[in-house]
Length: 426
Ligand SMILES: *Cc1c(COP(=O)(O)O)cnc(C)c1O
Image 1 (spheres, rainbow, N blue to C red):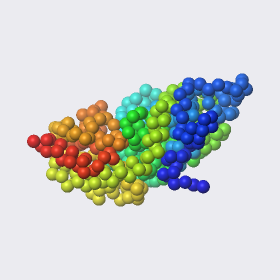
Image 2 (cartoon, rainbow, N blue to C red):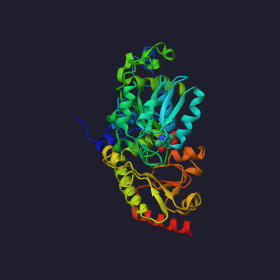
Image 3 (spheres, rainbow, N blue to C red):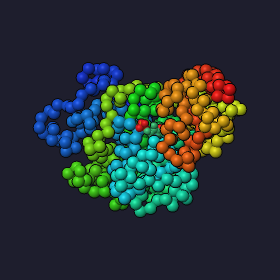
Image 4 (spheres, rainbow, N blue to C red):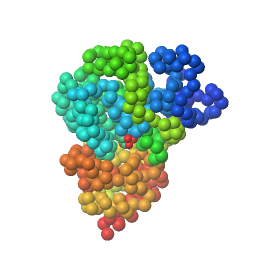
């Protein structure tokens, strides 16, 4: 029996606790698990039997969350980790090596641009940034050392909508996985795997948890990619020296990437999600569809109001007919385009700073996807590390304010924005 999204967001992966009958998933606050005997311990360490050894690798509360997200995304398996940025490293780790590159969209979360342009070079990896709307440029950027293509479904913060089916086709023709950061859209609005993506990553910190309480990330594997079709992915297709010569793809088939993520990634990189954080995220996901519907309708109302306002030069919401992504968004995201967008203010940098400081309901924070409405001026904060060219390319120029619309009463949000515009122009 296949269940609908609203049922799965509450039930997938969970069952009454076998020890106590507890209906809600318990927080298994434990580091280690008692082995039945020495043979049981050996079988677990050899991956001949699946079970719990040590919470850096696996934990029953985290396992419920992994199964729930894998189900909602339509994947074969998922590995949770300590943040969205950890998830991005965990997604690349099994497929990259020194000298290899990943082709990435110029339109990414500011922190991801820094991670890909600076930090991964310490591992001998590199990123080639391309405008992913230019499909020929994407094809041209792929070379013999490329190991993946990476984009965001709805790019933070500019409201760009990636043509996931077209990018998946290009990656597929080159024998490469497409990795999609689905943070801003969530599996409620977008299923990248159904559009041909191989891997999906999330910052669970945002809409999945939904109320600004914890950081977390996840890598979901479609299970559809043939890691053995070429010699490009030896860590998955060849004997893995960091796991006594185990061949992950041959042994685990569609779960190869997930098992590698636990047995090598979490074991040796240690970017583990703790069970308390998993609990908060499980609580958030139970109401994901309800929150996303309200985020979308509130954002649509506020974006339309802002577009008609004198102080505003531009609104980038993909749900507006004026957006160049309006048609693509309607086709790929029929349920809505999320709660995140940017506005450009006619008054430039100074007006942005005054506007942000004058808001009362909206909080000025470096976060998004909260039940609360949030606002930030990227050029003076999250995108500060970038050059002005990089800021503009990422949709975060000096005159741009990013808005994350919450689920409050929309008339109160509009009144707050109006009083802040008045103060900013006084
Ligand atoms: C926040 C965010 C990240 C990073 O996630 P953290 O949980 O903060 O590490 C990555 N991608 C997108 C789109 C984000 O919004």
